[in-house]
Length: 130
Image (cartoon, rainbow, N blue to C red):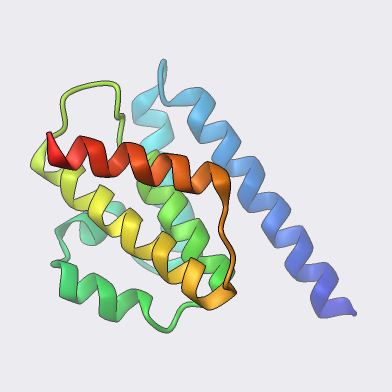
């Protein structure tokens, strides 16, 4: 029971951080990137630039042993690191491909579909195909 309570608190914290990042992303992009990097270091022991520089295969190996909650959070952090309202750079495209992989892995592990995540996946696929 203690472990479950701990996990629920951690998930609530993750959700709050993501909300903050998405609110800040428009006006204070640099600060939101710093929060993303801090979260990546805390939960995954990696920086955003290191993650962005990984090849798809390296990322798949990195992500494969993560639990479902962490996979979802990893995908969400990567998604939050890209401002999809401006033209995408190659780094943005690589981050979005990794986002898709993390979210799909989450779906497989949890056997769950998240409607908001599915909408975002559709947006990402459309952006990558432009």
